[in-house]
Image (cartoon, rainbow, N blue to C red; front, side, top):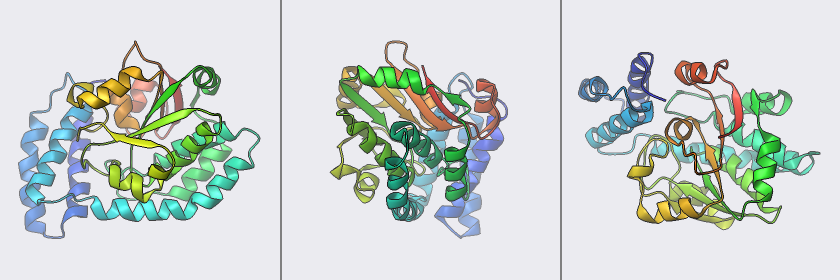
Length: 281
């Protein structure tokens, strides 16, 4: 993927969402917005949009002197944890627990404050459980999973991580080993080690970080330790639109689980906006 003209108003929207979470001071909001216009103007249109948004959010954090999403991340971890018992029960009682857990993990991808200012979690859960996925490579996923020795699970957002936890627990019930990957430091509402701890994921599986604050997974910006684990993994589960934008590797078996939340990605896929996707590379 690369930056399209339609990405530029989205960059502005992302900055505005971050600023409204980060401060109520209108003068500070104006100052930071004018500053990030330089980053937006300099966006490399030959790269995926996630490159530009990485620089944009670094600038916002630097100018605000804090992570504007810190509070909302913890809040949605708590909200999602309150849903955990009922969602876990739905998976356990399902005739196909793995497929149901995958659909719930995709539903959780709606918790994205890089794109939305508010989210409808319960409505999205209902849609995921009672509607077919727009792309559903569940059978190829089962085949890849059956032969996988080490699975690397690239997490996306806080709150969503609780839905991922259920999917990971379901995979582990098949006697598979999963390593979950968080970001090396804060970016938007993406998962860090603190979110993994709050969501209880550190009690479920090994959690590592990728050493990066990039949106998505930009391999050349990740740490040597992460790259070693990445190369060792026989199966990559990639959550979120940012990872879909940035991670493409013909030498790896990758399955993407996400919701298509912008027109550019939807057009790239040839699917309607809001499509739920389980897609192999």
